[in-house]
Length: 301
Image (cartoon, rainbow, N blue to C red):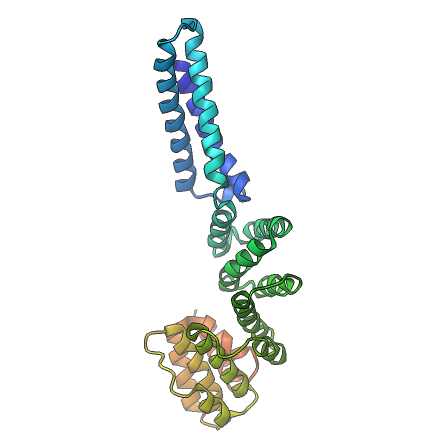
């Protein structure tokens, strides 16, 4: 039984490293909870199988001196096989989930981004359609971490892969959002124009908001306001923030500076500094006002 216990500890200790390797995640990016669950799960699996094997072997004619060694070997081997099978199931999604969480942490962002590049490149070589799905899943976390260039690069890389219509819609919507962050309204408009309209309601409302923003930054105030129409944003704070930045550009274009500033303050209250940064780029009538508020915030801090 002592050999089974030793095997259990060894397999348990190796389990987190095996999972990290299979998932494509550096071991240092695994959470303590994940490491403990992996260690305890494999340890207990080895113990249970080893004990069952030990008592089963005692009922045979095998030399009693060999039973402990065989039981430990069986327990360890079966536990390792179960570990590998378990870790390989949805391994790319699990790895992506961990890396996307770590992208939001300043001290882990660089390492997580490098690992994410490797994971996506590996999946592209193996299964292009799975690669597309992973890129679309990673876009949101990348932009939330401020990694707009990397998000745009990954989305543009999908040009060489055949996309289904739903995939193309999601890609072009996300790409249009990225292009706005690089002050390239023309590229954003081209991405939107590639989408067959109307599309799903949950996506259409965002496309309308982006189109209105493009109109507003070009100074087409009346057209932008009419394009927004009467969209209901009461139950969608993110969409409401997008409408606020459109209204801020419209008010600034009309010379109603104080009203535009009030709209921007409401936007800042609801979406933080990130909301104001969306007014700065792409450049439009309200961009200088948003920069003023951001500077005031920095000075007050």
